[in-house]
Image (cartoon, rainbow, N blue to C red):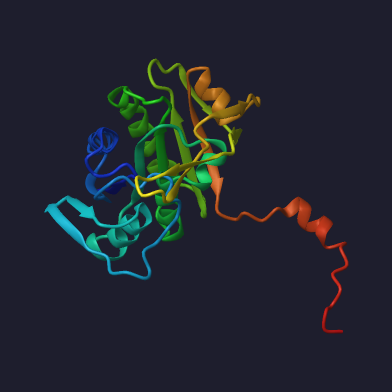
Length: 249
């Protein structure tokens, strides 16, 4: 029996994770192991300097008092008796495209699964806020089934973004470019002490042919393969020509 670990960064009570879990149950035995509360933009944080705990909701559902990456690590190493065949993360409320992936707890959960040697996929639904999770879920199921059938090379994962509404089909894509506004709002509390809200909600997208953003905006599911080797091999050849002086010589 195929075993699937389902997680997210929106929290175990989110609409998206329930839609994703239902889609995965048509494929295999599903374990929902997700954060107790929202952990958006937590990236790939692991809880290393504090104890972790979880609450067992039932035999197939666990609420973790930690990050999405904690959920995947605990799920694979401790909670699930048998190693999962697949890790799926989402369906995130909002897109995770372009530079978003460096912040995303949704994508980070899939990265953690990949690091631990399990084929992994992250799913996100474009919209502010998105609403058509149940319509997107069957696409998650078919993509997951294809990954199980065809396998992923290590260390590669899939980052999938879906339109919020009618879906025309799918496209294989590259990461796009998203430009956030750079601002910090300073606010004073009733006692006069300053606190801050980091900006970045306002964003502009570069319309790049073949990018994830272009595909989703045109009504297609964007499927982007991500590789964990971040080495810039092209520049590596150039930087080898640089002459770094030995400061101790």
